[in-house]
Image (cartoon, rainbow, N blue to C red; front, side, top):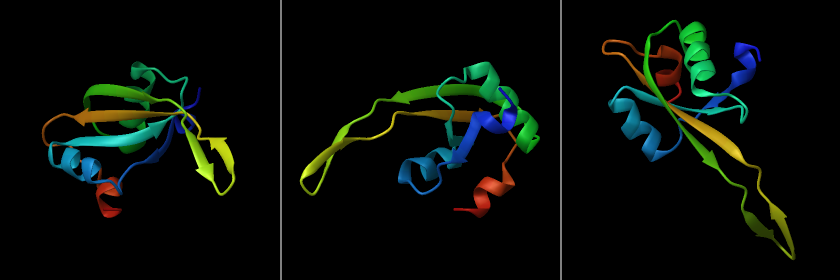
Length: 96
């Protein structure tokens, strides 16, 4: 997998993401097949920062209703990336 395929988009519009950003942790939606090592390498190369740790969350699909029909949301994988002290992602903070 190429590094641009691993990280799909940052999560900046939630309260939890803002709280984590104060702790020097950033949230990304990543490819479901990516592992922690691939996510670490992708963040380090794309944003030119040093990563201290990566935690991942698999969010299962849920059934939701739209008018009279039911549909299933897509499953996603989130990665919480902790950076080393003194490191920041400038592009991420501009979106907040």
